[in-house]
Length: 99
Image (tube, rainbow, N blue to C red; front, side, top):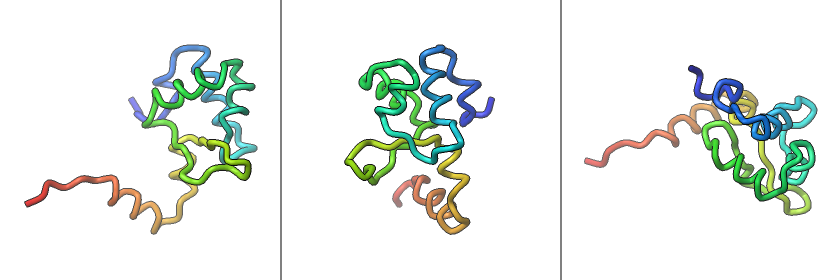
């Protein structure tokens, strides 16, 4: 099973609606409010879905223009990085035992 394919991991129809909104190719990043409206969930329930799947969802470290939380699929974020950014992300995510 591919651990980054949300279609294989997310089974709840309500949760799937959040991921369908994240996958919309018209947008690189989505606000919590937009995801809530599209999924039909309240903002806190939407946030819980996003936090439930940390391998699948990435929150922007920079808020949107109005200070809102922004989210994207991990796969989309990684696909848009250049080769240097991919290397840095991969190296910084590995942990090494100290000697």
